[in-house]
Image (cartoon, rainbow, N blue to C red; front, side, top):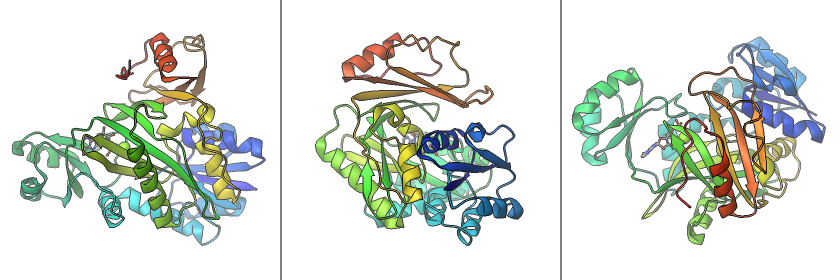
Length: 369
Ligand SMILES: Nc1ncnc2c1ncn2[C@@H]1O[C@H](COP(=O)(O)OP(=O)(O)O)[C@@H](O)[C@H]1O
Ligand SMILES: [Mg+2]
């Protein structure tokens, strides 16, 4: 069976690396010149809206999925006329618009920070009355890794923020003083079976994920169950097939949903070595119509993103239990170039191993010591 993937970035590369041993072949579509997924299959290099390229992809593949969340919904829908496309394109449309996404959460009864759709400075000023300060102004579409966001500390920040974000539809959100960020990565098979990995603790810097710890230390059982329940509700709401991630804020009062990603997720990379079945393998299994694999963790894991620059060759491999993944991308500030996963038997051991890492740009120190 050949699996077509919209997007040929590192997520596509790791999908391919998980699916090749299972006997699948991959064809990727990506406009980029040096797609990291090229090591795992053919890459059709074309713009997302290239009808001929989409037709070629459909002709070469039995089933189609995506690894990039900003693939135009129209491309997914066009492919769906020719081949089964998983996850359902509707999940792509919802996740691409922060307003539709938060409204979808609200319909399912999943709590979020208070939000309002705005476009002009006057609308922001009016909405601040109910949202309160500090607040976050986000572009509704095309944001990622903290791009397309401005913090509003007082009302005077509204004008410059609207101007900086460029006259596009916006979402104003209350700035949540969260205790930590969490995520749930979960999968649903074609037969409706669902499975979730343990809830993950995430540390961001400059809007980019830097470090994930799994299972999230000291998470109350009731909150863990709630987070998993929300992920399952989302999967069911779309009749979803594949892996989905839900990002959460944990506050003193409880959990709030931030956003969802209808794809394999950076906070789930630890599952490659740290779980019985990885998010990549389960995504492949799901879209191919196979049973899902066991999502139980093997001990405790930490995933460290390598952003902007890679440590010198060999600098990381001396740390016991460390698994290095390099994506084959040219270095650029803020660019995800690779990640390293540490696996151990306990949180204490993971924290000791993190202390042994060579300096890694932007790596925070998790406060669990
Ligand atoms: N309402 C909020 N309150 C506090 N921090 C936020 C809020 N929304 C986003 N952030 C911070 O910014 C990061 C990136 O925002 P997010 O909405 O997840 O956008 P994206 O990941 O698509 O860039 C979050 O992981 C979180 O650290
Ligand atoms: Mg996010």
